[in-house]
Image (tube, rainbow, N blue to C red; front, side, top):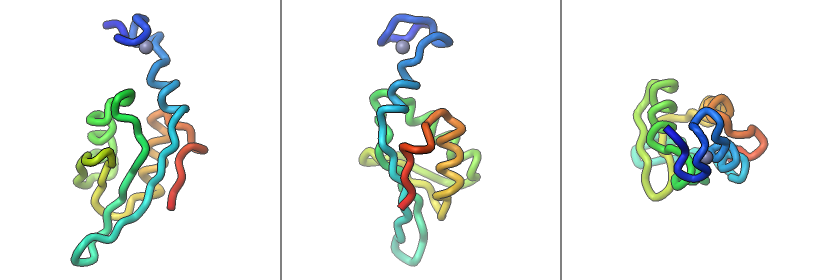
Length: 100
Ligand SMILES: [Zn+2]
């Protein structure tokens, strides 16, 4: 299967890599009602990155629930540090990810 953007086979295509490097991602902790914590990841461009796959990866590695809405990934619980580590492992450069 070839990339729809550059036409190269998937294993040669670097479109997603370029997209990952051009972004700025913030990870923050939000306190929901009843004191529940949610880790919110913002800044991932869903038009360039397969956000569903990324969410699935985060949920299974962190063993928790999560959703994608309004352009943000929401993961139940405080997983800021681990979420960053997972994003880095998935190919996002560490220096574009900011934890607040
Ligand atoms: Zn491509």
